[in-house]
Image 1: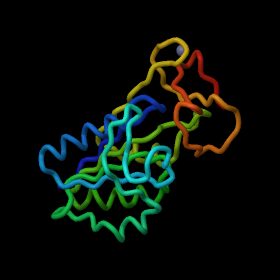
Image 2 (image 1 turned 135 degrees about the vertical axis):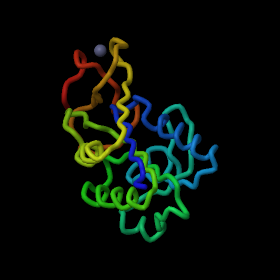
Image 3 (image 1 turned 180 degrees about the vertical axis):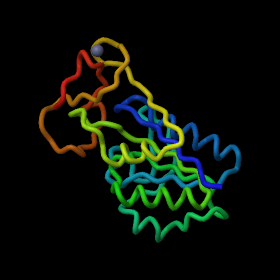
Image 4 (image 1 turned 120 degrees about the horizontal axis):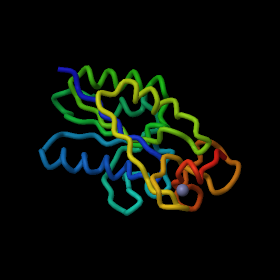
Length: 183
Ligand SMILES: [Zn+2]
């Protein structure tokens, strides 16, 4: 049977990594064989762990690209039950799509987490495509830093900079539509 693909998306500080971690801990509790991967670009806290903003963590493989990742893991049903991918917006779109498809066809479940939009409000390509492939989608929300209402957007506190700029609370914060502007 084909594996199940679940994707968790939202703005920064919505709690995506916490949701992913909950599923990781549940899978471990069930003695499932798991692989946890995040792109090595995300080194804001640690290159070997996925870490939530409230400091919960789990070891992970820091991905440079899919080619190198496939040299480390064979992704076969007899050695893997679930693959967890964090920060999918930073992974190559086409390679991520085709490798998730291969993993699912092995009968392995995949759980992804990532940003759906950048701070300019534009969809991230890889997240968008993975959402389109997903069997199950969870969109989660943060709280606007100005008014405390539901936040669907990531607001960049400083102007300019690269789209893939990785940063925590010093650069970005969650905002509602009323208090957000693209920058
Ligand atoms: Zn607001």
